[in-house]
Each structure stands twice: as C-alpha cells, then as structure tokens.
Length: 255
Image (cartoon, rainbow, N blue to C red; front, side):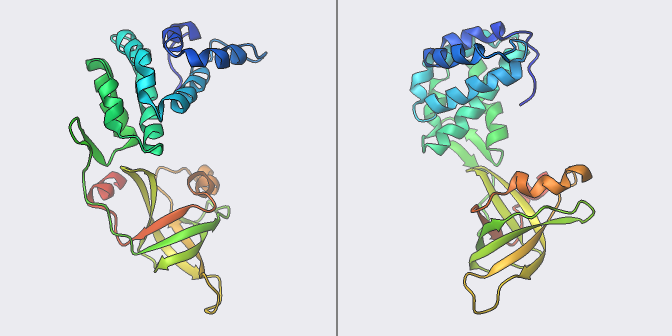
C-alpha cells in the first residue's frame, strides 16, 4: 500500500468512528510507545485489517462505514485512495468467506463508492469485468490445466540465472518445459510463469514424483531482488496448476 498524503490520523477519524468495533483495538494501538500519528499509511493498515475481519463475512455490518466513505471521499484524493483500499480489502475478504460480491456492491450508497468499487476490482480481479446484475464476468475462458503440483521447497535463486527453481510433488498430469505454472490470487486474478526446465528428483519407483522446475523471472524483477522472488511468490504446500499456454489477455499483460 502506498503512503497516503494525509498529515495525521485525524484526517480519517470519521472512518474509525463509523466502525465502533475498532475502538478498543485503536485505543490499545495508539497507546503503544512507538505510535506515530503522522505514519498514516502504516496506521491505516490496522483499520484495513479489522474491516476485513468484521466485514468480510458480513458486509451489511459496515453500512455506516460505506456512508462515511461516500461523504468524505469527493474532492479528496487521499480519502478516495483509502476508500479504494478498503474496498479492495473487502473484495478479497468477502471472496475468501464465499460471500457473493454483489452483497458488497448493494451496500454502496452513491456514485463515489460505486466508482471506487470498480477501481478496486481492477486490482483484485483484473481478469473480470464487473456487471451489477451478474457480478464478476470473466474476460476469457479459464485455461484447462494439464497437471497439478504441490510445492515442497523454494530454494534461493541465483540472480545471474534467467530462471529460479521451485521443488514440487507431481499430483497429477504432466509437466514439461514450455508449460506454465498458473498461480491463483483470486477468482479473477492469476500469475503465470513459463517453465524453462524440469528435473526429476526421485526414482521412477517413488511416488509421488518429485521435480525441480525452473521458472522465468518477470522483466520487471530487478537483479538484486531475484534471490527472493521464489519465496515472495510461492509457499510450501501451495498447489499450482500447470497449463499449456497463457490465456490471450494474460499474454498481453505480460508484454
């Protein structure tokens, strides 16, 4: 999250007041010796996290917050940024709880919050278009997986190489160079990386088959950051799909 331009936490007090359940946490947080009311971006994360916990499963409980955002966002870039951030958080949390995102959208009281909702979804669900009646509508058919793997280790990458390793157990299907790993971030957001090499780590009699696969770096990933890319993007026990090629729209995003 970027640092907001507000000078003090007082600038977003109306949002805190609209969520009474946050008051106890905020009092304890601001009582800490290291609290700085000028560190608005970091402090706002506390509120953002609380909103996810409270409203992810029950967006109707945040009606007062939506009203406050509608009232305070017009003409205030910092306030609008906060509104978009909150709606991004709610979209992710609601989906994790299995909540239809149309329940969130129906709670938005005016054009400012409804516009912010659409902006938020371009970040959290970029592979879909929002339709008020239908909700999220995919922009392209999902790729059909040809295999699945479970990550067992993410070794540290060598920055001088064009690819980095992950070690996986083959759950089903097959994996070969030229395929892609397809990581799910949300129902309408994925990251695909091309597989440049596949090495079998186990004997033919062992099951499941364990593989070391090499994944391409993104051109935007700086050389100094490359040793950490694997552990930043992939977690042990995470299941990834293997696909033959990226969807057309996803390929355009990679360019």
